[in-house]
Length: 197
Image 1 (cartoon, rainbow, N blue to C red):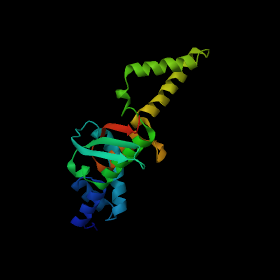
Image 2: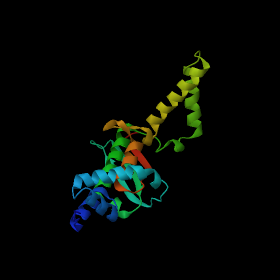
Image 3: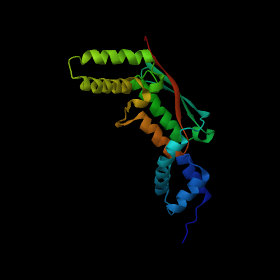
Image 4: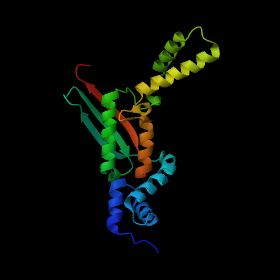
């Protein structure tokens, strides 16, 4: 016996996930009308297709702001998505707020590794190499690469562990959110202000 999927249930699932109309209908039908199971189905299908969405244009989105208690630190952030429907979604807004909180707390300098200037990478590589002099050549290379990874996880937002859940990087959070909402998401740029800095 097939489950009758109501328009109200589809609307509610769309609002919760930001997923497409047809995807919501199929997930509700597959879950027998169970909202939580339908969300899980959408997330599983979305995770598999998140990589496919990476090349899609992101021209909508939000400018989110965050002022830390006491007014000493502030963040302005631009996160892009594909449609204004997702940009208005509460889940997407909460995601943007979490990214703002991350920037305020962890002080990244760049969004991703490709924004790090070559001169900064070369300087870090020189420092790391100088710190491991006297070790076997094969070990030096491995240690230097490890120190560069550590550097990226400090200065690049996408490489940082999430302050609310250090087991997850910001990049993993973005991938999960793409899987959940079914649209490509790009953390475009940010500015972090600190009083007196």
